[in-house]
Length: 581
Image (cartoon, rainbow, N blue to C red; front, top):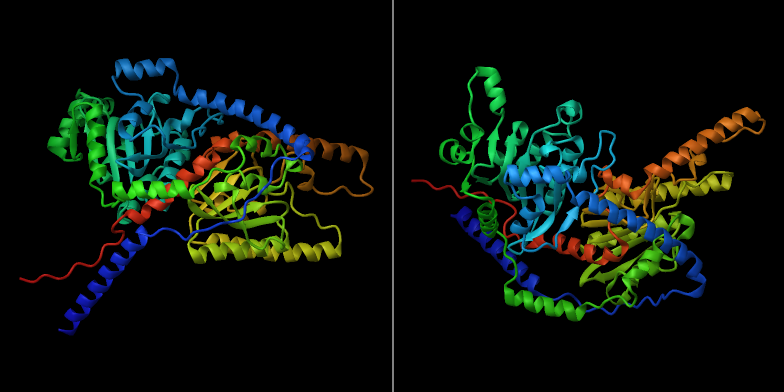
């Protein structure tokens, strides 16, 4: 009797908490009137601003050039074969039918370009986050016009990153499968290791256990290891005649048994919908498949705000939101071409935040790191921005502020532009100062790593050395990490390779000095090439290169996406009561 009463009380308490949570979600945020950052461009900024602007325009031209290259997929011949002979839709046309609109956040579009094994536009698959029935969902869509849908190492890496984004932000995941399997000559880089091919299936199982919904659409070939993606998803839709699932295709059957069989008889939609039961929904054509997928998403256990509530919320947000006082186009001249061309980072902040308002924290202490609160499209964020070397005082301040945001559940935005080289030690007093700095930076590293709030990083300049870790670099798993086109990612900045090489002895011979100078020049040339934002993005060291003037919009989408998980009704499955007959 006592246990029954206790169970009822516990259920009542949980119900009360849920009700209070529902009420809390309808409440408005506290009113705020943060101080305005009045930082217009001054005449003494002009020289640096114009140099940065010229560099940004050059970078933007390359951005546009690569964007056009990526949108062409595998080229005109591959597109014609895909659409006319195979009668399939192109991957972007599929997304138009699946998503509510074309305004989606694409992740790492430049992945796979200029790699040692060739150009793989978009790594052979499109990944991103878009709305389906009003719900933000991750999509992973193979592009069969690129190398026939063959999976390269960079393809696997991109798919795994998309699954990480879905897991970290608790987003439903939709797979559009049209894959020819792994590229066998590179199998040693695709198959055996922990974060290679098999990790995709492990992630699917873990996401399912976490109650993150996964839906698969088989709209093309699904061969070998790729066959597990639809069979492990919660629901699968398969398209007649163009969709196939099998471990070994007709050529392998003929080689093994001598029997000739068609792809449709071996692993077509009818077979798997009527005989094997591997798929849950049969579609006669692709358009029907994406309509079915949208209907599946509409059954998920998310409770989005009612339309009336949404309208009220949007009206409230519009009233609360203010555009920055200064044009976002001015960010092009604030994007530093190098560390020496850096202007006050508060000028960047004032062109990103609502009404250019910013409540600074510890304004007079550790001034080489700017910290404080602001709103971006109505979302409250804590901003941590580089404004010089990460000194002892700056690291302590950063550690304090990150803990404060973690305590208050405020998402963090890191604006990263770190020093080009590590601090040099040329005297005993400098050694002591650097030791103190090292200890404070270690504290900040721990704080950033352990902070449980969502984190977004934008590299607006340099991403160099250990300072970049403290500013939530890739290794510290921010929810999203983006680069501006002018950004540089390397251990030290180009032109500073000498700081990595042994120092010259006083009596060093001239020949040795010449050899060391040649080594330094070669290293700087390599750094110049390998530190580029486009080199980084091609290797998936980030979630994409974004234009400075688009940063505010991208941050709005990221903050909306992060917020959505609060609308999932149940994230944990309670223990069922025992029923006895």
